[in-house]
Structures are given as structure tokens and as C-alpha cells.
Image (cartoon, helix red, strand yellow):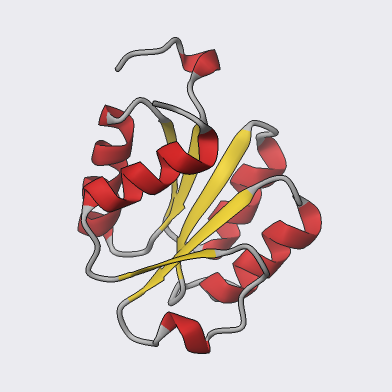
Length: 126
């Protein structure tokens, strides 16, 4: 699927593990999305402040920066309410986390197909 950049939903991946972020970003791009990448939560906030077109933040819960991924999810919900949030973790049961209402949880390890299907459902991209 190849839509012009302005028509493709923008997804921000906040993941500190380079290889996981790379593989996930590649799969999401191949599914037709525009992908922005952040290696820590401070970088993710900077991207959100600079871009008004981010539709979904896909964040790991255990992230470096001034906050973890769960706090990033709350910051996104407070400052950018229309932005949808997907959280992932392989260390902590996601059900035990304090995440904003409406956050979608995907446990690690996840398949890129599961992530892209979830993004397609959230954004209406087929």
C-alpha cells in the first residue's frame, strides 16, 4: 500500500531497543503508515510538540527519559487527547499498569502483524 505522505496516518514509536524499534517501524511503514521514531520519552514529547499530525503513539512501558512509558501515555492523553495510545511491555503484566483509559495493551513479544492490524483498526487504514 502506498499513499502519499500527507494521506498516511502518522504513528510515533517510542521504543529504546533499537532492533525492536527498527523491525516494528519497518512493518508499520510497509502497512502504509508514516512512522516517526523516538528512543526515549523526552524525544517522544519533542516530536509530539513539533508535529500536529500524530494519530497514534506506540510506546514501550520501560523507557529512558524524564518519565517512563506509562507516564508518557498519561502526558499524551492530557496534552493531546485525540492521539490514541498503544502500550507494550515484556516485563510487567500490562493489566497491572496505571495507564489512561482507552489505552490498548499489546504484550511483548508481539508480532508485527498484530501491531499493524491494531493500527489499521484504530486509524481506519485498510
